[in-house]
Image 1 (cartoon, rainbow, N blue to C red):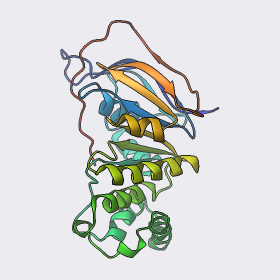
Image 2 (cartoon, helix red, strand yellow):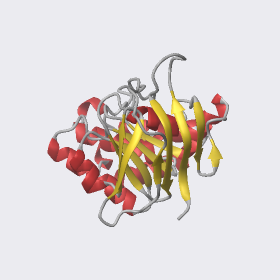
Image 3 (cartoon, one colour):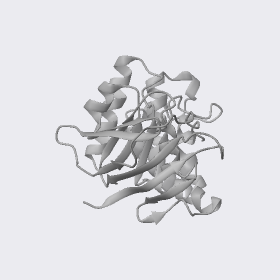
Length: 252
């Protein structure tokens, strides 16, 4: 199966003399796979996601997504890469409160240069699919947490990205709503959407991802395919783990 993501001996530290946030990580994710990344706070989970999103550059190693080396791209090219190939879901939604639901969803498509007509068609399709079309003219503050996360998912999908990245997508939700969002993510993956999610929720990882990766002190410690999961390989270089710096926050 073709690899969508390949990290080769990737390390990242934010200070020249500081500890590694991610150290000597090699990772392969197949197209169509759903991977959950777990680990304690400060273990390097969000840094790993940021490296794949092109929000951070590795100190060493290479990051390849869909056959493209993103670690060597210019900032302009990285912005284009994120608009065209990556959709991002955040724990606290990151919706713009002064825009309606519809306009929040359309914004990435407009930034990517899509026509208003095409962007609206795609946005309406996603709002219908996610069962929130009745809120298209509402403002985010009037919605529940689960409804806002559905809007955020629609926004992440509006440009039909090859890769969906989710940082604690159920972390701000109650258990029941979190299960609904987890099931939604699983349905998206079953329809062919590739995704990587960072989560502290072991139940979410086991039930809604095809593979779980453990990261400890910046190093990959374990990969566990779920029942029926895809088996793309992972390796972690080196032996003794070192304390990693706290992960960088996601940027919108």
